[in-house]
Image (cartoon, rainbow, N blue to C red):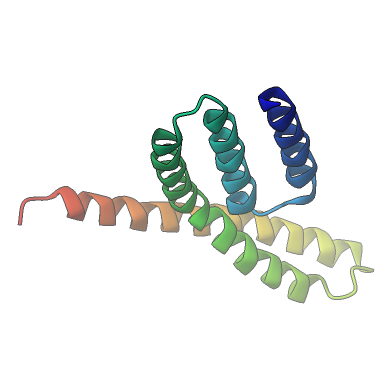
Length: 122
């Protein structure tokens, strides 16, 4: 019975991951799969703790990715218009790549600075 539950969990995870796009959705789904797999071993308390840590890691890792993607996609969609002008479209695509690079770098540096502040002696 446990192997059937694990098998169904894997199938559900694969279906979910192929339809989910934001980083946090995919990462949290992987945490849930790991928790279900861990639960098969019968150590629920440890599984809960690992799941909490996993989801915190997802929030930290994916916060910048998802926020920047939302910001940059919105700017790209406004820039490209109806997409019929190839030159404008290519220019907007390049601006999108620059936006993502700058936004993610700024966000990650901000998070790094905040983490350093938390560990600095007060």
